[in-house]
Length: 86
Image (cartoon, rainbow, N blue to C red; front, side, top):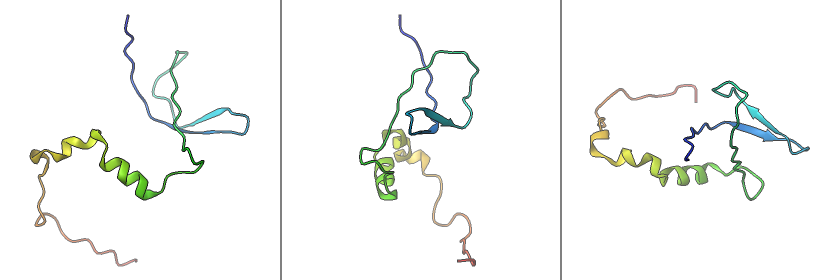
């Protein structure tokens, strides 16, 4: 029998004792059995902004934005923003 599962993305830290510390609240109450998948950088450091943007630009989750019906704004919409504090 197939078990349906929901996915929740949270961040955390693995300490020097290899214990996982989750940041934020888990959106359900326990006790409840869960499945954990850890993603961590291969090089041992966080990817730079260019790497994140490259991955996001090619992520199929954003393919809906290529649909012409999603293009609802034009360059004439809104007002220019000028940040005088910079």
